[in-house]
Image 1 (cartoon, rainbow, N blue to C red):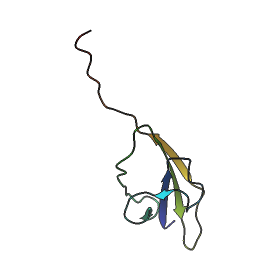
Image 2 (image 1 turned 30 degrees about the horizontal axis):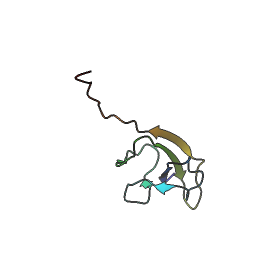
Image 3 (image 1 turned 90 degrees about the horizontal axis):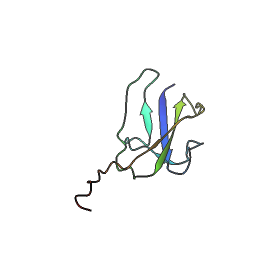
Length: 87
């Protein structure tokens, strides 16, 4: 393959390459490179209590692409709560 496309949604897994939103990598969610390439992105600003659904497609020359690989994550609220000091 020549590149990987990654898109996400907070509703469901993107099933098609135009569903959801491209991940914020500055290249429309496309990561250039073939198998074994190393690259990444930071997805900041995720909302608490939301589940994020990601789909990734290997893209081949022309318009050919793979079936999507999927991953979901949920951001937990990690705010610490102080114990009560008096009852």
